[in-house]
Figure: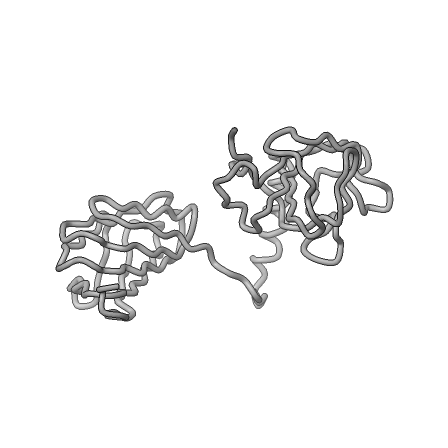
Length: 236
């Protein structure tokens, strides 16, 4: 059984109840019915229920994809529901997380709303959490900037580790790498152009090393900075 999470999701909201024909949406928390950008009174769509708020569970039984034909006039319910389109039909409790599966049109509408909100000078972002991508190993390690701007990598063998990047965006942006060194004195190399203070790459010591990188030209050149190191002794 495949996982339904490889989709474009709307903002997060919750349900109050679900039965064979309708889903009652909890409008007191999250985006409420507004999360279902496709769901006008007579516009069908799909949604995914999940036991995991972050939609990262690897268990297909933690998901159920449903279809709906629209929403009621009062905008409190998804109506015309078809259960078990994908995943496992079950008795989801009140407070279960649900997200709409966005069409390309609705995804672009959502991006337009976000652009309008985030491109205003002087706006303040409050109470947000950045996604953390974690990995372990040596050899070539690729940091995918399409997934996160905060990375933690554990070096677990005394050999060469090469750090590379994927999906570098245009313009100016930055990322943080927490490099946890737990094995001898491995060699760390960088598979992208980095300029360090005084043209000297930092020595990676045992324990946690925090490095920050910023580019102003879409990744043609990165400026690296060692923010701190030797947090812990590397022997955990």
